[in-house]
Length: 172
Image (cartoon, rainbow, N blue to C red; front, side, top):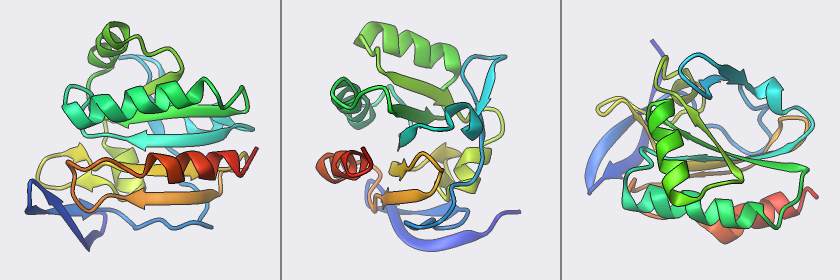
């Protein structure tokens, strides 16, 4: 079993346990396999050569996750083709597609960690008690080195959008 960490993370003020390592800027990003659809899987290498902003949300069908994904979709329009914005959740791929269609999301690639929760464990965001991925942001350079990380202490809070976008822009 993967390691549990004692990061002070909460959900509505109640402590939660995150499973996996706490990644830091300078670390090589762990590879992952996530579902783009129920049958199509992608991995980190599918985005080789691109700057990656990985926005992790517990579920697109909640207010903060909805707002976070819409904000990064809006920002993606100004970042150019060198950047890919990935939103990772444990929502089923068809639920992600339904949500994106209804929300008009056209620049963010939604990927699902529903099958194995392996992304959550590798990136240290799997919530043991809920089996959801904890809200966090990772910015990877084109060589998959982590340049920026934000693990939110309270799952219901918004990430620092400006810092994440500034980290991406610094790599352009």
